[in-house]
Image (cartoon, rainbow, N blue to C red):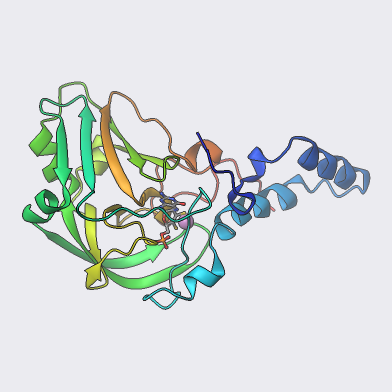
Length: 242
Ligand SMILES: Nc1nc2c(c(=O)[nH]1)N[C@H]1C(S)=C(S)[C@@H](COP(=O)(O)O)O[C@H]1N2
Ligand SMILES: [Mo]
């Protein structure tokens, strides 16, 4: 649960019930029937306003990325303290150190990073370990269908089907733009799902649970597509057409 509520990062659905109802009533009284005009942009604002602009300007990547967090702070963990657990429907549950990850066969990907709200950073180089290799090391049990990812921010979650997770362009990343992944960008280790919108690439990754069904992630239970293929999916699955 969200233990550190942050006004800036609060999605429309989580705001006090009276507020949106009041606006809807007023809009319908005005004859605008404009729920879509209200609800659509307001959910988008939840993404857009979860960046702290003063922080963004301090970043090495020069603010080309926007820095998002849904908890109102930017978690930090040292490489030494870092652990990635792999649990659930596996033969061998794992607890991987940062060193163990970087000793595995590395995979490099350079691709555009695209947020569903519209911003894009072209040609970002990433290095990490294929998620498929980590799954093979753990041994996925028969009947498993999906993965649930957790973050050491304590709130954000994500999901992938096993088929999606086994793609070559899905990595557990420990390097970005030629250096370590900084804390604001989700270091020391984050997920990088190249073919999907940025919200699938969970930052501050600390857990992978193998499950028998997809459990929709943080933004997915708030209306965004579970299958977040760039271009083919999304905006919101239930988004009104304005
Ligand atoms: N833990 C966590 N991971 C997250 C997010 C977040 O708020 N918390 N935001 C997601 C979204 S919507 C995007 S676009 C990218 C942004 O990555 P960046 O903050 O490194 O720019 O991270 C994704 N992963
Ligand atoms: Mo995003």
